[in-house]
Image 1 (tube, rainbow, N blue to C red):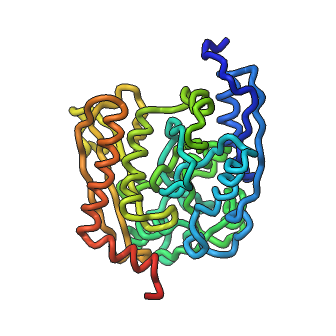
Image 2 (image 1 turned 45 degrees about the horizontal axis):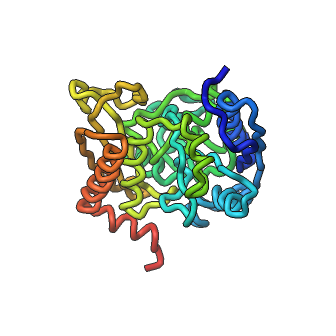
Length: 345
């Protein structure tokens, strides 16, 4: 039986989208909380968001992935829900007033998955093959690596996207590895894209829990779900994106690793997602910004030694994100992003 002190909160309402992956995420958090607080009543508030309703338009043209969280946030404002569970990569860099990310959970695989019924890897695709993705980040890096490929927009939940692949609309599609693993579709993964070729999205593979600021009782009961190592890495990635004024649907990639001093960041550990308690004090952050057509791909990176308390390390991680973003801006990232944010100018 759990030795965690039972909280004053007796009922908890979790806002979630209704897609299979979103429900898995909400149920996963519910089950972890039930293990900690078996006497608590936990309900799922299932919501259809604007992002779920508009499926025929690229996300970048209709407001980005923030469309998947606004209705969930409104439920918290209205006190219909106490928390919302998100894929962190879908959460906008600036949260609405009065809301906060109370928990960064332990990170699952951050990579992108190559899914095809015919080919085993992106290198096997014949010239001119059609690849499906809704992500400008994936598009710019794939086009930089394989300029001959055709990128075609792919929207919908995981099942819908796989159905379009199976119908022959694409030669291959790219999805988040962690999403497929969570809903037990690992068998569809032919391989994971090497991080050196396709750097992940900010926060990819991590779950975050959003709640109201100042809700001390809710924050206290959520505290055991927080992963301090993941939190430091994710703060660095989100700081980079925030400093670039990037949303969730722009050609920006960032990935942070915690390593020991004897584990050089040039050691071919690109596909390892290090969540060990002894991960080390060296925080290495890589960032990229690219043209959507792959004609230009800017890269910057920096490694620092962390020290002090958890709070002090988080401040250092945040500054690292700002530093790497500043390096990208010095290389011309601002012009690339401005053309995407304001194409009519």
